[in-house]
Image (cartoon, rainbow, N blue to C red; front, side, top):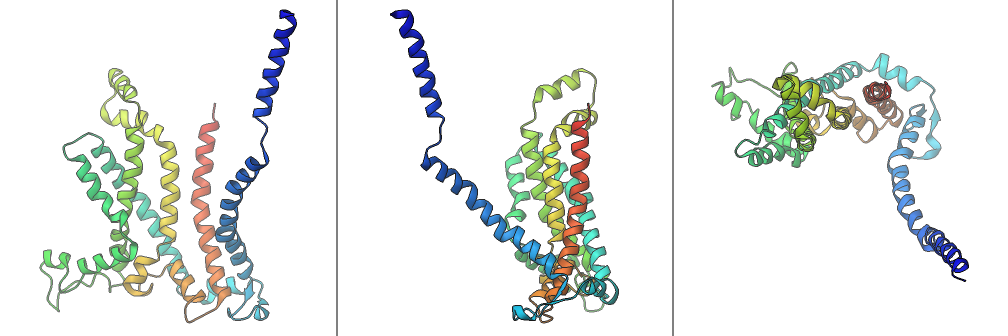
Length: 314
């Protein structure tokens, strides 16, 4: 009897474990809600507007009645490329914005992260100071820097002792200077965000790997670039995506400064003018939005392809 009862008991326990893994109706409803609601929100707020913008870029519409929508083919794209003078300066400014954040703000944030990772005295205080601009809204940052760049009362002109009406530098009104001045504002904010991301990666780095590299004769420079930095690859992917997004949605700073004109033309400001501005030409604005989408996808796709190739190499 004992030899027969033991297998039966094992079979019953196995059946009990199988029953415990079967989802009940309430479990299925919960999983459906948890997966369905975020998917629906993403579809309504992201994918549906993107698809509609692509479709409207081939249409002519004044934004009033749906019956007014007319097919326009490639006319909208031909207009912005050939007959709209601010288009190419805006594309150039967006590319300059992207390169400046990538080549100036990102290395600056990495440098701050490396310095703060050395456990210097007051590192937490410095980290909080550098992170403060990230917590401020972009319009507020624009207003703060308008005070800094003010011709007669600004901090910079005051330090340069050029506050008179004859020799004061018009940082935000001069089309040869205002783009670079606003890029400094964007860097002031972006560097703090990059610093926090890299600092989190450096704090998670195994110190034994650094010690082993030093024992093998590597100096601090070689240790960082050959041992530490390769482990920050996931952080690099996030920073590349964030940098591209920040550079292409740079609307608040230029709009606060002069409405996105006179040397500060950007695709995002022109989209606003055509879609919700007095122009009210949805087709032109949608075509500009599609161009902005393509420009944003190119660097992100290129970087991700390169990273995946490195990971797949034997």
